[in-house]
Image (spheres, rainbow, N blue to C red):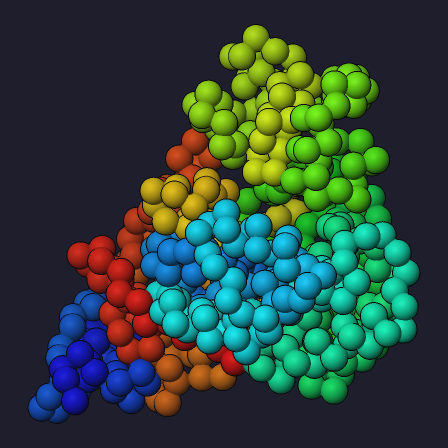
Length: 520
């Protein structure tokens, strides 16, 4: 056994991940596991490499409860945006979008997404995809939900229709295959195509499969604004149809007119929990969400993919002329930021509010947005305001809410596209907010053992003998993020070391070593 397989971290301030008070101690690592947690100064046996972490907080590795790294881990396994904020495990396959299963019905669409990142999709099912990720050897551990949008497209394509019994049965069988392969559950994205076309009974049918495996239902609900309470009732209904385990993705109250609904939402969730449903949620600590810029288009475009929207607008001058007045009369463009476009002439405008970006080009806000969507609609993204900072803090402080970046793992150099800053600075912000109100021990619990229990990541999320040696070592007084919309790929400060499966994945030298696994 080499000395890199036996290490002792000495003189740290240890957090167990379960909410216990911190205590001084040493942590012995043997291969991929924590061998012992002992008082400081315990004699180090021969053959152990000693690493001093004096004055640092030693925590279980942070777990990103809501990620979208399904392809970026294959394109660039170093996952710098995640590992550099202390994340050692992330959950992808969210919002209904996974990259399995692959059939003739959805192959062309998924292959197009893969090719855009230089990835060759040489798998067809969950097991093959998991093997492919492990072969890539990412720096972080990962688990992957099975996406309903992908399931529906695999069974019936992307069109708006009620599914036949044979298609429902096919979806159910494909979901069973994914769960048997080790997926922790099903995700839905009920504002996206084709998931938005699914009725309750279609979703209930799939949730009944989850009950067979006691698997999780994670949902980007049908509404996070005007229809929030109705969408929550649908999610709770589906949880009852399934295993009773529900994860609400990026819980929020969108638009000021809906901010007052939060306390009713809390009461409904707390009542459901009291009735025995295992309801949890995740949230990022930002008040701007980010998604495709195309969501500003009129409702007639709702059933189109971004690529179809771009083709439609670019090929029809009359269509552009019809859309422009709708865009021009949109209120509150100041709440929308341009966060990504591949158009080189607009790269200097990234991070700006739409009115300012438009003014710099000599266009009106509507004309500017239409130009971007016509020429780059398949890739253009925006950040959308309208979230309440006060509500955000209330959500983050709930004891059943985890931290999720809602971002893919990307490199510093933006070669895989430009991230929302939460892709590089969610966990420092989350810990800062929770720590200031509830203390550091509770903040650590909410990013370690809580998500580990939600997604049933055995042996992760705690600092205890026998657990996997996933550790995040930080200076608690200096741990802070530096990313913003102008410079979203900026590293956080105060992070000292990150260990993944007993390997120093990130050390003081800043070099990334890849030791992640698929959790299945």
